[in-house]
Every structure is written in C-alpha cells, then in structure tokens.
Image 1: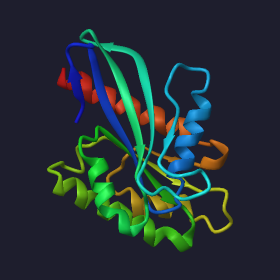
Image 2: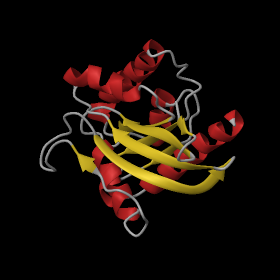
Image 3: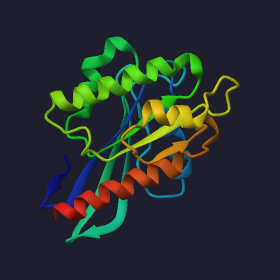
Image 4: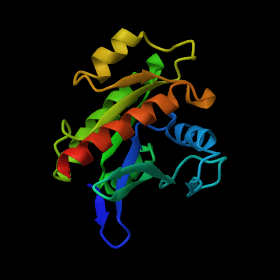
Length: 196
C-alpha cells in the first residue's frame, strides 16, 4: 500500500498495469507518457528496448497537485510482463499496490489468456495478503479496433463480474487510456482520503 514520507511530506502510491502478454499494457503506458508530455513528470523507463517485449517492467512517475492532510501524492506506474514464465516478477510488482488497471485483450482468440491472467491476479493478490475485491481496479477492454474483438457485453460478463469501472480502449491510438487512468487515480485518491 502507499508509503508515507513525513520528511518530504509525500504519499507514494503504486499503480500496476496487469494483463496477459501483448494485451497493450506497455502501449497504454506509452500513450499516457504522450498525453502527459507537457506536464512535469519523469519519463517512462523501459527495462528492454522498445522493439522487444517487456521482460521485467516499464515504469513512469507522476505527481498530483492534490494535497491530503498536507501531503502531496506521487504515483509510480508500472507494467508487469505478461509472459507466463514471469509469474514471480508479476507477483513482486504487485507488492505494495494501491490500484490496478487490468488490460484485457478483446480479441476472441485471446479471451482465454485474459481470463487466466485475471484469475492469476486474484490469486497473487491473495498470496500477498490483499483482498482482491478491496483493491481499486479498472478494466480496459483493449484492441477494440480489431476485426475479431468480442462483443462488449460478453466481455463484461466474462471479465468483470465484480462490476469494476471499465473502458473500451484502443491503446495504440490512445483511445480510452487516459479515461481509465484518471478513474484509477480518482479511486486510489478516495481510498487515501478515507485512510487519512
């Protein structure tokens, strides 16, 4: 959960993009970087070259103007690697998480991968001592522009039985990415205010 630093008067929060391999997690983060370009922030740090898939994580840091009891909020935003062999890395990156954006691949041929990843997310959160239903989460149904994208009502039934806020996205065009990110920030900030 969030880390409070009384010396710097900062609350550091962690947002994690989670989902199956190639669902659009890194692309979503890169689109956020583009949309925040004119604001003061640190850039996205890649652990691998842009031409390769994410091996460990991508990272971006942002600051909020909102003050909670005299403390400024800062957000570290991570993507997890989606490949099956990096399960330990995904679990490690969930440690201390304040909010999750689950990026599902809308294409019918990849729905099973999204379901497996969503179930793994709940299991990993439980293993870390978190109640998966209590962590703020947003779901992105990505790749909505693909010809094989499933019907949104079916995707919601399969992937969002808990009724989390959800968005149709086309990450490579930036469609819906900022809206889902703003929603998770708002929900994390609400949790911080309740805890303050």
